Amino acid sequence: MVPKTAEVVIIGGGVMGASTAYHLALRGQKNILLLEKDEFFGQEATGRCAGGVRYQFSTEVNVRLSLQSLPMLDRFKDEIGQDINLRKCGYLFVLTTPEDVKTFRHSLEMQQSLGVHTQWLTPDEIHKRLPLMRFEDALAGSFNRDDGLVDPNSVVMGYIGASQRLGVRCLNKVEVTGIKAASGKIIAVETNQGTISAPVIVDAAGPWAGVIGRMAGVTVPIEPYRRQIMTTTPIPEVPADFPFVLDFAQSLYFHREGDGILTGMSNNNEKAGFDQNVDEAFEMVNLEASIARMPCLEKVGLLSHWAGLYEVTPDAHPIYGKTSVEGFFIVAGFSGHGFMHGPISGKLMAECILDGKFQSLDVSFLDLARFAEGRQIREYNVV
Ligand SMILES: Cc1cc2nc3c(=O)[nH]c(=O)nc-3n(C[C@H](O)[C@H](O)[C@H](O)COP(=O)(O)OP(=O)(O)OC[C@H]3O[C@@H](n4cnc5c(N)ncnc54)[C@H](O)[C@@H]3O)c2cc1C
Image (cartoon, rainbow, N blue to C red; front, side, top):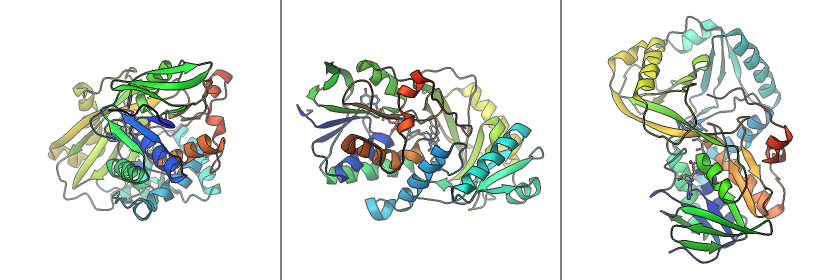
């Protein structure tokens, strides 16, 4: 049974909802309720993601989010008590078009000016670092050794457990079906298990954030796009320090997963929608492109494959903060790279709700109103 009242209801038990719950409770907020429609927490975008964490972005705000969020992942085990299998393998963006070279060169200068140690690689240096791969067309590479991989489920369950220890009620199999507002203010959340009166609601529903927005009468421009991944059986020749490699022009990526390789590729022809079945025809496209880059993949078997949903905004940046309905807050729309920004985003939302402003980093310009007011800023490094 759901309780009849709460001070704050968070909708969504992915990394955003879990981190927001934890950071609100850490700041002393009482009577927080986190609702998740699925049987388990973190099984949607967060649990299906590639687990990559990086400093390499094209906009200053994304680099600044990483500068706060990634050190929180470094400290996660000590602070939260949960091992998250952090591996600093580095991210290597391989660039094969003059336009990408120009944009990444510019981004590298911006990253370095903020204290991020991204390095520029020549084609020879790329070939030396990636002897198992074929990148004859590489023009340059952008590499950061501090980027890497983290286990998404461990992060979510770490935050859920820590939230519960601080008194948060985290409920699964509770689906939000409606939101009641009166005189422009939130008054209650309706669920498949009853109505909960609450003055504050946080929409942390990831790919479903637009659906939740509509329930509150707020237009949230977030669309779900299917993205898929496959993993292979062991490949003994892949070294332990194999980096997260991105063939940027093809939106094709590889990293070590267990003793094999994980590969994914974005389908530019994908239409917005909630379908999470694997598109086998596109999987073949991914497989052929992967084998062309990494010929040893031809000899291995498919271990697993799955699809998940990116939560895409028109400018590929997230939406943070208040809306036109008092008490209705949003933290969503990370456009395919939000897992890594989960820690700082929960902290920022706690500040926004409790202090009325973002304290750790000014993300006030990433508000919902920017779309109506034409204040979008575009992120280039979306995979
Ligand atoms: C294939 C793939 C690869 C990715 N790779 C990376 C990567 O390498 N690095 C990275 O940083 N990011 C990556 N991402 C993006 C990342 O997964 C997301 O940005 C991030 O996980 C979003 O977290 P979230 O909490 O907003 O959404 P979610 O994890 O989807 O959580 C939202 C939750 O809300 C719940 N919900 C929805 N509607 C309701 C309702 N009505 N009632 C109750 N609950 C509801 C859902 O069930 C869900 O659990 C990837 C995504 C995909 C799909």
